[in-house]
Amino acid sequence: MSAAAQRIASIEEELARTQKNKATMSHICMLKAQLAQLRRQEIESQMKAAGGGGDGWDVKATGDARVGLIGFPSVGKSTLLTKMTGTHSEAAAYEFTTLTCIPGIIRYKGAKIQLLDLPGIIEGAKDGKGRGKRVIGTARTCTLILMVLDASKPVTHKKLIEKELHGFGIRLNQTKPNVYFKRHEKGGIQLHVQLPHAPTHITPQILKSVLSEYRIHHAEITLREDCTVDELIDVIESTDKIGMMRVYIPCVYVCNMIDKISIEELDLLDRIPHYVPISAKDEWNLDGMLETMWDHMELLRIYTKPKGQIPDYNEPVVLSAKGPPTVEYFCNRIHKALMKQFKYALVWGSSAKHTPQRCGKDHTLEDEDVIQIVKKVG
Image 1 (cartoon, rainbow, N blue to C red):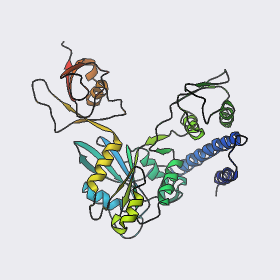
Image 2: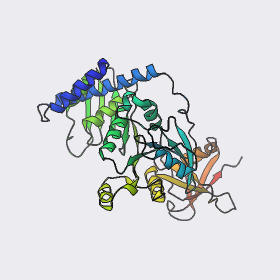
Image 3: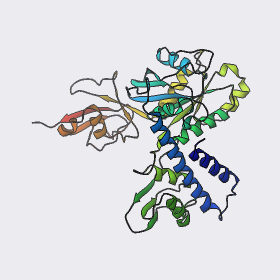
Image 4: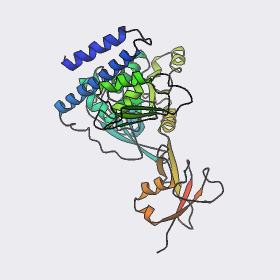
């Protein structure tokens, strides 16, 4: 065990035995900041030592979205990829059948979705065990993560995988904290609160303790939401020249092999948020899984209408709802030069106040809108 790993274990033990109260909160926050820095340094040193990614890992992103299959070995990821895409991925009764990243394509509601079958990860993957860094590193590039779980195994497996992903800067089913942070050369620590009440978790003393661990003595912080200390550390770590950028990815928990469990056990699994039960082997509820995937990816289908012709409903332009999905974003998705010729757009659909509505580049589109771009003359 490296010196950094020993220090991480020591801090985790100290955090576990320290009682949480007003007197110890500043010390706890200081320990959390130290822990975040040590984990980042450990990951960076391992990535430098490991070198390049290797065969099969640099899979080119294609289509409108990218979905990664994450899970422990032998939970049915390869079977699921084969059933969903028709792409053959070796499946067998022994663990670690898949040793590289295997891509496939799903066509759903006019969208082209790339599905990646990633090798099974093990506990300690974030520290480099079992090719874990490569697997989780690829997962960071995904639009959506499908965490495949064996329905007959303990639910604690879910927590273990979440811990591994969290250690590599992946935040599942969370939104980026609405916190502004910027370092300055002088001026001290300036805390601005844009809340209807005092912050529940962040006080000037706690903020100073956290920032002192990063040797930051001059900075401006604006809290636009009541964030926790962990979320504040994520914001600081995501800042340039400090740490690893956090990524916020939606996740669907796919409970596979439900043919092995009873109805009563299935009812217990139903309490897990963002979950969908399936049996990849028997092809049970794969349509329900696709619908759940679509809801979590938040994709919009926009149909184009050439002048004097009917709309093209076969090949929609797929946009992310987080875009934001404006007319300008739509034009740039087709071709970046289109905005130079843009005059206005005609929009039919739920986003239009009347049909058709003449819109500018800032108009926000909605799912299944029809759009016609009118260009400048000359």
